[in-house]
Length: 116
Length: 108
Image (cartoon, rainbow over all chains, first blue to last red; front, side, top):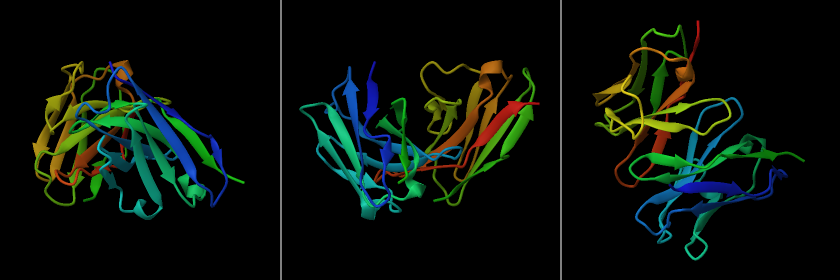
């Protein structure tokens, strides 16, 4: 069964870059699914961030597109997120996930706090 | 496309029937899923393509609807069903996703 694990700093300063990596195990990321990120501010709802295919093709939430880069490393079976120029509004639990037509597998989530 | 969920909170007792609504701002055919989220956990896929149960989901969960109006029904609430439920739509191409704001099902 596929497993996803987020990793990265839990604290980022305002105006800096939030960087997260999702390591996928028990499943090859080249095996025909999309991969991506969803976030959830504390006490609030879910927001789709973006999706990437193993070829590197990306699809971003328009509201984040100007600050967002996603990438994939097939040799390490992982994919990554960079969100630039963060503010307190970017404080959230960030989930990585596998997408077929729908999100069928999720990481456990990692809380990233934006604060000085 | 904007998704609206109602009610915001549904207060019920175990054994009761829960009916949750999700409305899309324009037709999305049957491109709708429902997720359940418990505190401190990642969401879990319950229903996809509006009416198909995901693997391992009990039969008391059912989904219906198409176009703009969708419903998630829990026929008889079990204690473990008290959670937040989100609907989500996807576009066919490019593959983009939008979540509704959620409905919390809590104990009356």
